[in-house]
Length: 402
Image 1: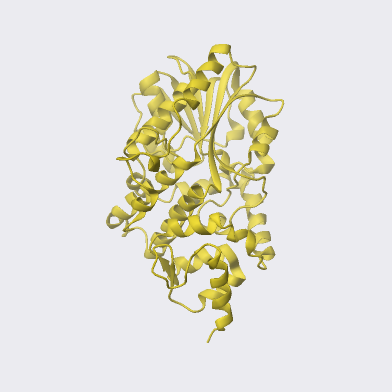
Image 2 (image 1 turned 90 degrees about the horizontal axis):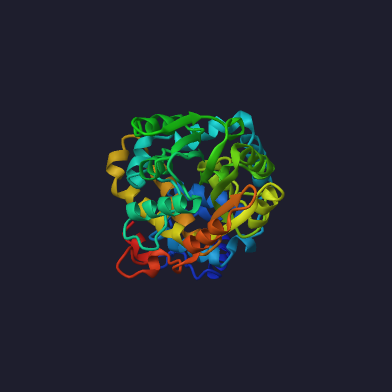
């Protein structure tokens, strides 16, 4: 029998977030295995995620649970013996941000099955934060993000555009179709290249399986959406130098990335182990430091609250289409993927993570360019989906029934 003191200690920590063990609220947790308590006390966030995957505990609304514990900053209150856990994760993380591991990262996450991402994402398969200012559906919100991005870049017919971390081609295909530009997309995922290339046979879009450090040529515009999170602190400066080398003197570069409120050198061990093995979230200071002396910062647009409803919509699609996926993935994977999507939703809702679109120029944008960027990014007022009646509703309403 486990010591009642271990359960009491866990409950005392959860009290800071207003969460009860075996309580009735949707954000309360239901513990099925008494070994949960010593496991989490010893292993922290890694053990919390693994024990959920193992079915040791449940929660009706995981996103609400994580919103509460993130807002209460329980991770800062817990001082467990996590040094050895983190040192092991850090050692692997450092290796996987080097050249030798780049394509392994693609295989570990993005090549786990196009069927999964096809049913989870929008029709254009954008695996990044949507823009919900005036959108009622995920498809509309993702197209709004693509349009916003194209407008910030000031795309014109005939321009050559580089998309670093192009995914399945959501941006590349949209930009080529609507703005008649030529796009080169670079990714480390073989599955993304295959599916993306099959969707744009009649468009001036080319996909390349390549490390960003090996990109050659020059481009009028460069965009990178949801890829910088994989670069790693040691490589931030190199990344900016590569972009500078490939950008024409009068060009613009748009960086779309999740951001951290503080400069850190660590990553959540559960996410690093099971979801993004080489991820690291940059801070504003780290980004500007990497770009210093290389680029001129023209515009910084923050819309982190929009990631919450994006993740909720992805989870809804994932669960609604589970019957199509269950022959390829087991129940433990379903629990892992649910934990991933909803824990991240809670983190954005608590404003522990941010989403930034940053526009850089090489030699300074024109007066008109800067004026246009200001109008595009900041007027009218940015609203998240759950501030708009009649669209997606509150994030809590979205997650009900999951």
